[in-house]
Image (cartoon, rainbow over all chains, first blue to last red; front, side, top):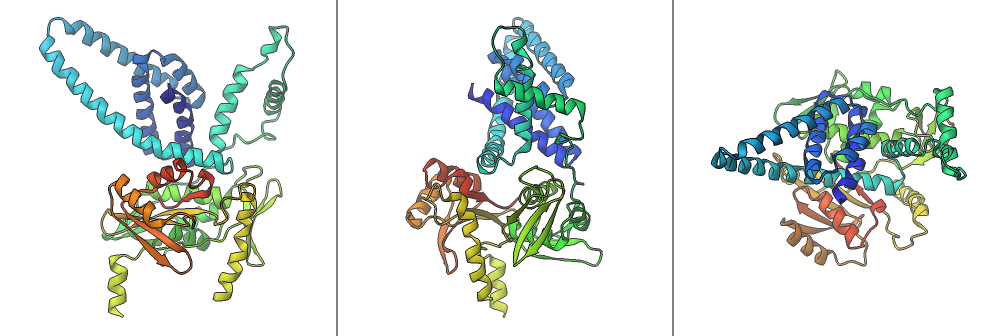
Length: 311
Length: 112
């Protein structure tokens, strides 16, 4: 059952990934995962609640249902075939089992990371906008004027959600937290064997209203490497990095230095005052201080030692 | 430059203000970083372990649990830093939380 409880938490995170950088790869991945979850859920007979949750979470429901149907069909087939070809079936089942085991392992590993990060986020500053929203909407649906059918009084939370709902319906631009913040995916190429080119740093920094240098400084501090900017304003990073990894770092940057903690708006400006950095929100006017980027401890690598020797 | 660092030091208490209520963490954040080595190999570094814990013993436990190598490095500004081979970030964080060495909100995981 604990697995089941975790899944709703997990899904919004996947969503977040999709939404931030609308890359096709991600979508495919998450879809696959969802399908697999259904597979897992079926034997225990809890497929329906899981599906409902997913309905709220993302709009790929029809496909999921298809996946469900497929699975059912498959199972039936295997059952009917069971009698005549017992030996073959056994082998097939063995194969399936193997697959399952592998998939399960992978899933668990990934989940751990995502889950931990999610919990970190929740505990930290409540920065995970998306998870919060998802559960909220789900709750709102449940509690939607349920007091009308009964004698009881409405509770505060019910009224609150109702108020917010009507507010949202009547003037969506006012309660416009639905507007997603999107950024072009970073375009990452490999230069030679050991260097990575991040071609659109300048563009991304511009979209975030940040100084590219600040973004670059953060990237280097987080990745624990160094690099340079070439003539075409592309960033050359030492070391091999994949697009996904850079995306992750950028996401952290956005959480730490771009979004307003008060209203979650990404429309902010970073300025320096008395050697301290402040983020001022353009939407709500609040301002907060952010920590300067600090490179932490850097482990000495073979190359460092070699470089030290050369001098 | 030394002036600069001194100025940075009083900046840190800003982070500590929020942590005043738990009191047990005067050292602030625990940073877990990852760094690329040659090829697809990586090192994980753990910085900011509270002083009351014996770094060597913790390292020993890490090495045994995560089946990896590691050392304790002394750095002037940051005290003792643990280095472990491979990407052990999540495992370290989980360990620290489960052993009540640090709170989840005090742990910062860096890197990709």
